[in-house]
Length: 329
Image (cartoon, rainbow, N blue to C red; front, side):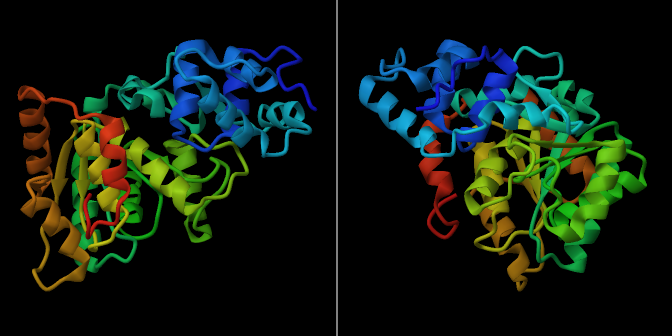
């Protein structure tokens, strides 16, 4: 058996190791990190005792789940990340985003960064997430571009996911305006997915920030996209969905934002457009405010900041948000 804890991990490399072995947003890993820190959590992989506040059975299941992955050469793999030129940010670092603490035990273990990591230290009130359908319409892309440019001109950082469609339009508009933007990926920070977005993401890396909670080299999966969505929602004070079909993943971002007590806005579209069916549902169900321009976004953020919000339990809402949109957000 490989003794994983031997060799003297520090807090940063221990968290990097856990990101290799554990999927993002794992609540058991998160609870252990919260109670023990990274070094002690890694130490539990070599022992048989239970983690405090977790229980013996759950600890054993957690240990078995993580150790099903290849453990040979882990130290070398983690050490190789440091030679790739990507920064890392962990809790306690100057650039760790305080807003992510609202995720509690589902907060990321570590963030890999390429670009201006200092963007992460900005207050969440300075960040706005713009997301929407990959299969967007010209109308949606135009509105997304206008909103992103307006937010950028006002000094805000536009957060998005680097995908085709609405997110592409948002990033490109900010870059054209000379503003600041963050792309949060569901793959390693070194990967451009989809490949057709490579030029755009390289530009973001050059003047903005590409960030991921997954180690370099990691490929995206459906679950990792869903897990990434909680970061898109948590980083910003507000999420605006420009276009979304009835089963769009963008509704998942809105669901996370609502559960975290963030402001949620949605852009209405033609009543006949399937690309706006999801945004219309958000508005109809009272989850989102109607957004038609940048002034609406600013008014929504201002109003939301002035009205006390009772934060919903992230744990309680997790199952609801993971369901297909036709059942629930």
